[in-house]
Image 1 (tube, rainbow, N blue to C red):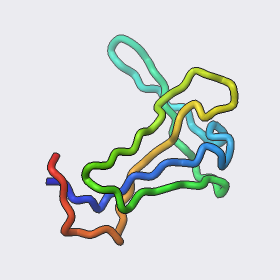
Image 2 (image 1 turned 90 degrees about the horizontal axis):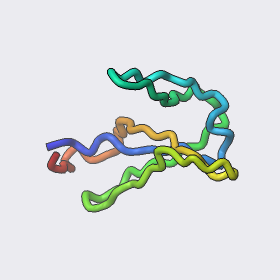
Image 3 (image 1 turned 120 degrees about the horizontal axis):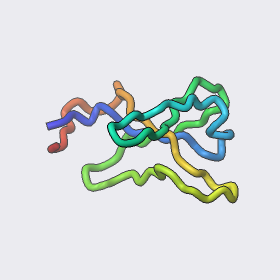
Length: 93
C-alpha cells in the first residue's frame, strides 16, 4: 500500500518559456545518450496541483512533442508531500 500524501503537480506551459531556466541533463544509457530537463527556480512559474485525485483518476502528461508551432512541447511535472492530504487514504501498488 502507498499513502496518498504525495500529490502530482504540473507546470503551466503558458506561464513562461519553459526552456528558460531549464537545465539540460544527460541521461546516459549503455546504447545511447538522451536528455531531460531540470528546472531552476523562477518566480514566473505557475504550477497546478491535484490534491483531490481519486483512485480511478489519472493525469496525462505530455512527455515530448516534436511540433514547433508554438504549442507546449513537454510538460515539466513533479510530486510533492502534501501535509494537508489524508494520512488514512491508501492505494494498492
